[in-house]
Length: 498
Image 1: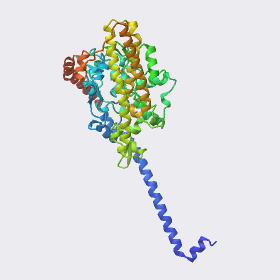
Image 2 (image 1 turned 90 degrees about the vertical axis):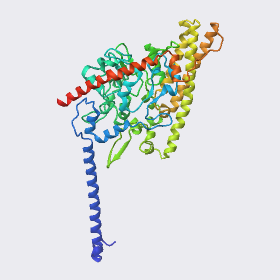
Image 3 (image 1 turned 180 degrees about the horizontal axis):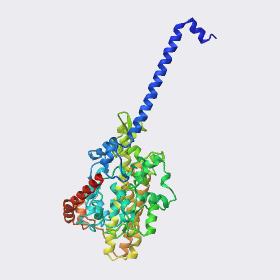
Image 4 (image 1 turned 30 degrees about the vertical axis):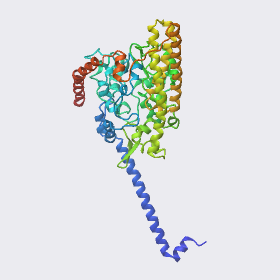
């Protein structure tokens, strides 16, 4: 074979071709290396704070000066115009949509007021305005404990650091009104020095510890769900100190948490109609998500609700936390190749089938409460009612676990249907036992059910004075809340002077 040098001697132009080809390759490699260095420099710059942040800085706008791209997307949560088939980002009066809820929660705050929540940016405003927090006129007043603030604001870890966790939970909700003014935001999930995800609420880490696990061992991908699990979980207020606790010691299934509560003889309230010792599920979204196919494939909450986006060639996390159905291209279609319409139809089909069964369970539960009242009225004893009330407690716990899990019908439709199905059995058992008891008490007539076709009719039936509650709230919003906000401004201004 002829050598390359001989070929070039015979054909000098071949040498020039090779020379220029080499120059082109070197030039392109130089461009690639320059681009990589530039992108790395941009990434370093993008995640380097542009202002110094205090360890417990609660003001989201101050974080926004450090991380403007993320803050710009965070502010977009103020937009409440998106509506999906069932919910969306707008506030929806769920008691008006489904008046049966008033009866299910009779004697509990949710029967006064329950709205489809808006984005995190409204967290403090909405808890001010809900009738559930009442109309306190000063410290020590109102129906709710201080613990109710825990998931509403980055002021919470700041205040916990100042006064201690147990002390934070003590007292009334109104006691800490002027301290907690910034809505859920940056400091709830991020370390201000490193921007690493962090757990800012102790209850999750404490639950891990009781299970023999160390939350510090979690991977970054696991943290992209665990920061949400600080609040989007089942929890209760333990003991006289109202210490926020996750009932996970026996597991996170509906049965495991039910067993935990039963052993502790815990109840959230006594039902005003049936007198059953009730449990109110909070929002066990994380527990349900863990049983679904997305969690099993390693998909985190942030992957779908806070997908990555690009702006000016810079990749960052979209902090407009929202339904993936309002951002299908960046969430679902990163993995799924079906059309947006097809993907939405998949979601709505699952939701519709679950809600159809959940509604049927609701109907049975309302009747079970009313029939239990008739049994009491006919002279039933506590011993005769014991098993009936326990069935009602367990049936409604299952209904609420499914209903309050926010997205559970999509996150894990098989598990949700299993839970609703077992709740249906419990409710039917309660009604059958009540029918037998009524017969034993000599009552064999048809039970009259009240007209609860509207929220107003249902609230009147359970004995709520809505006019009084509304007036108390108006006074609270017009007098005490402005004082809280004024005190907060004065406190935060003092930080900037130091």
